[in-house]
Image (cartoon, rainbow over all chains, first blue to last red; front, side, top):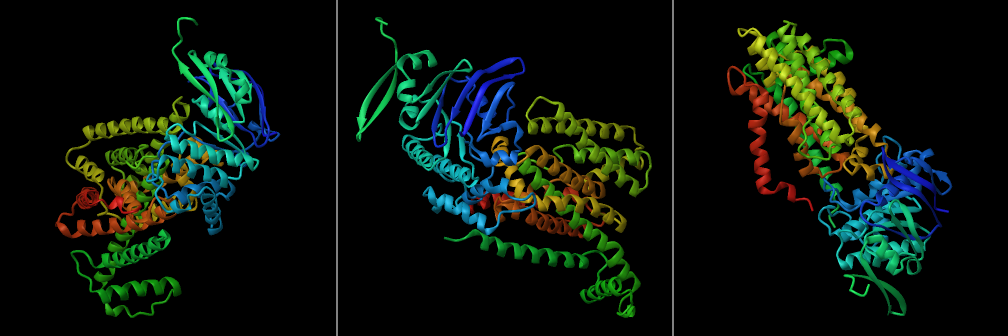
Length: 263
Length: 348
């Protein structure tokens, strides 16, 4: 079991954000977290990553309570890719990926050539080894997301949390990045990502967790959990769900629309 | 593909060589001329004496004045310039990383303004020169400590709270300095305060250099050892923590070290602006962003730069210009030139 969340409550001071959230995630699952703005997706991630301490309830990763683990131990369990933002300093892609190994190094140690090789292999595995010496502010958003993916991989954690991985990516890059992520889960990695696009949940995720008002509204295979009514409740608009066949695969699609007079 | 490490290594060798040349060359600069051969002899004799406790080089080859100029006047001053330049640059580089902002200088948290107030107060109380140094050092430390603890109680995020607290504490101390200037004796205290605040290495003695050496070394060595980790502080808080870094502890360590170094250098030299802000920029242009290279490069370049500027200060006018004024006069045009020619864009 990668993740087990039981009766999680979280509030910022007096303001409750999450209430009674429970779910568990098996190894190798690709889970989309869906929900309107401000519903607590980031707070949930904060609890998973040990940045925030739950008001009550428990969060455990691979059988360990999150708040009993040190930062270093947590780094071995879970890696994190924040919403994309250009770094202040223009490090080379290779340096940026090598930073992912820091949690494993002694306090005063800098990465050795073998660490750099490890980072290089990760870049190669994602097909961006040619960018190694490029400045990370001079690559495209899609390439930067792959770079961060490489950094998360060298960290060696089996769970990856991604905050809106496709937020600033174009149509093609979104697909390329998410395909890579899907490949990772096939090799046993567990990935949780948040998204505002239900179609990404349909297209990529094996499972969806829909949050509404700080609680879980729906949890399951996207095709089943995301009914038209669910999406309508979630976002407060009318949504049609259709399905189509692409390359032998049945894919569902959601389309928002303005409700007609008969509804 | 061109692998950057080699390119950087060559540049580093050049920078180190430049440092050595400037260090020894500085002994020849000044109103009292010392022939190069005499300089070599005097320095060699001193080194031999320090190692073997014997006079093996005959002292008859140079005059007593020459020895005094080289060993008692120029050596402490050159060493002090190198130390202060290195210290301000290393502190600036660390602060710029920690606050994720390349426009930050080492006095961001009030170290210099605190030290300035301490010095002004000491001058007002007619302390000895060494007393002024001690007071400046202590007040520099006190200002940053105050800013740090205030920020711990703030509800803002860690860095923002620290910057705001630092700016406020700094302005408090500079108001204090203004008040001290107001009540100071206009005949000799006020000029002394003003001159001190402008920054000068004119009256630096061997004792001051040794005094500054200890905190500067104590602060710089951990920064050198932790320099890979400083890279991680330039990422967002969440990223650094998720990689397995205890950011609170690392940031505190960097603040303590950078503050020790800044306060000590301001205490012996007065306020020397510009160096801590811009030398790290030069180093980034030449050596990239990785703190593994940036910290050592800042040390060498800062030291070299300040020795050069101090040499200019020594010869340019009879009365000696305060070095704090000269750093900007010399440095800013060079930096402007680099901005215009796009030095920063050369790395890919």
